[in-house]
Image (cartoon, rainbow, N blue to C red):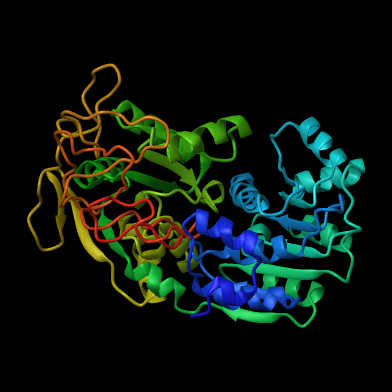
Length: 477
């Protein structure tokens, strides 16, 4: 394996990486970074959670000149949430380059603050197509000095209808640039974009990524009806008791309706979709990252690029109708070697969509069936769902605890402290710890003997922040 040191990264950047517990490159970083440092255009196809962000940020940090105030690197992303996440990673690395300024430009944020930042100079700009065009038309942003251009999540960007905006931005960037296109899938419209705007790009594909991701996730299909689907979901949440879970709905209205029903049932839930204001979206994501929420009900577009440590479960409340969407959804869990669980609810009308998914991933999903007294393996005996409360997370007002949280003798940690589990509890559905063992002060999440591995964008070194008595620590984000 090629190390970061062997790639020729500067000592200051290497020190930042070591300080974050990042020691070894992921496969996509190992293949892409040398090509990018050599100045090549690249097309990188890899699933989410593989470390793509550092694959383009590290070369950018080496090439930018902090002594020049103009924008020299531009990263275009499809969603605000992804722009925020990339900006957070970029600012960590920017500490290695004195004088380097990073600006996030996305809708819903105070435009005046962005204007002031641009006036003072920002060498790295990260933004969504709409807000970037707004600044370009105002004249507050010019791209004449840009030499590094990144199109991140290109497939989703075009799927969301941003092709015209993206092309307009690209045409304003000098042709002498270096272009980096990152995409989880490679549909025809992405191929056409690459052909039109890239110069003899190197093609990098991490072919085994989807298989590795799938192998780390227990995949279940729960047979139910449209009428019983909501009860089936509640039953599975109570049985599995996730630490953090993302629940996918097809539309914004369905997400809102389901979230309301879950909250009425006593679950710590909130919704994420395009009808929310930017302030509300950031509030929801902050609460989810801090584990103040257990469940995040989201649409595909809103959840694209979500990178939250500790997601143990994904629930497909509405079945995805293609394999790529299925893989993207369940990729929120089981990241970078961490185990996860993906549950897909399938009514009789969803049979063909389920078969399409199974053919696409080359395996049959574990079958369970929802019945009035619980969820049973097909051919097995139905077991009653465990009631919420008892071992659940206690509410602040003394109400019964919610699923998936230790209760008795538990103390909420402050600040950035991590939540632990009792020894032997399994992330895929084992009982959470009780007594004082439910959450550890400052310890890693996960079963005894292993620390939380993290996910694609922020690798942790073994033992860096894991459980003190565990056999391994965090890695591979």
